[in-house]
Length: 216
Image (cartoon, rainbow, N blue to C red; front, side):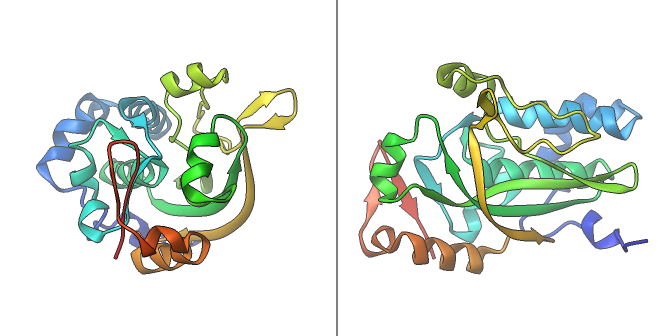
């Protein structure tokens, strides 16, 4: 049996003992079934923040779970951090996963800023339920899915929830490369990979209402 203790620990970024988490999780703490807890919390994180990939902040102080709770918009990495921290608060082992993906819907504007089609360090989470690791992606809220003409990606607490179909077998998200899973947020690695794929974002200042990017 894998040692799961480390995946229940509070970290610098997954700071679930902050009083804000007690309030944020609220009635979910009163549920007794881990799967029911996970599903309810997944939906809360997925739909509680509007998905916003146009304001990215890779600085350590901005990737702390309790700090993200103060926002009403978040990108996939931020939502994954909140979900992973909350899962550990509920006593459910969690770890962070990252991948390079290609998004096939509504990304023309984003690609204009990124200057390529690959989206680097797409964030997801794996939780340990029923003696197995299960992956889920609480990134795209109901509103963005409705605007994009796709159903929201649900999570049943039993099977992986990673691939969002938009037409038959075609996928909303195509996974091109997996970085693997991490105990905590790999800030240095994330910045390095972003710089490798999007060097222009590190060479200029990006801080406008339409798009912002902050880094180490």
